[in-house]
Image 1 (cartoon, rainbow, N blue to C red):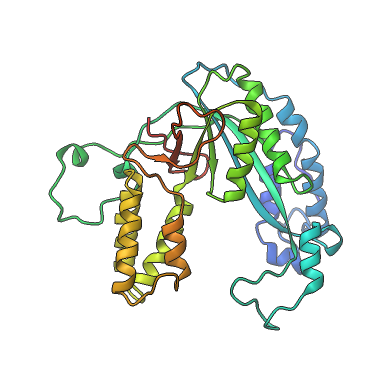
Image 2: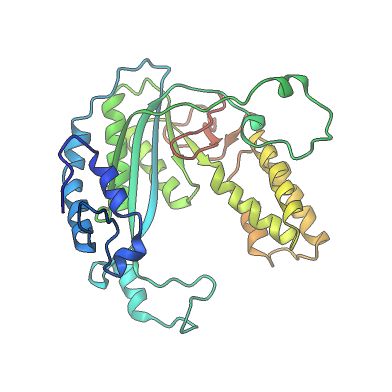
Length: 336
């Protein structure tokens, strides 16, 4: 195998190239074949990944962020990812569930069942971004073209979200989620030791994540604006839409667009009320459809300014300071 000289190609790009056909790798066949070189086998790819990973901590330890003003947002994010792992490395609770077994079906999992083969890895990031105000029209297109035109809305182009810079990353399959959250806060305090900037935490809405963020923020005495990923919120709305409009994808799609725009405008109570009202009209009794119940219970913003019910850190006169945002790939939508 001819190795690419150092500096000619990023290691990350090289590993992604040789890993682009994972099914071939699992069968032990070459994933990358050119006339001038041999194939890269599964074991070689593993060794490449391990060799590249040894430099990650040192790289981010040496990262020097660009100086910022106090108006620059300090953005954090944490997320979990299940990794299939050997039985000897499972966390204690997962190992007990795996030993217990007892799945209902032999060939597949029933609804709500887990195969107890994964260990949760937690990933964290911190970066700087300038605020960039957007509204519902910038995120979700109006599904009702016959609605009376809004001149200002129709003439302006969609505004783009803020751009991440000086991004710092961490992650571990060994450390607990709480330990990774603490590492993220350590990096944030390194950038803003006086807590003079606005701190934003992007999460997918998982209660456990929010609890960990709340606890860490209280411990450090810092106010954190919690932003819930709108993409995850829309998934709950889609589940409710399919329950309300089974077999009618176009109607469900338009319903989700309207509901999503209402939520982004800070009127989630209106969306929840509409779901509760529509359920019995469609023959769905209260508490009998999980998709409906989950959509109604989702922690969405409750005021016209887009504030959510989550608050981390010092309470300022009881004010709720979290925000619901549009977040994907390092982008989010602060309301101001």
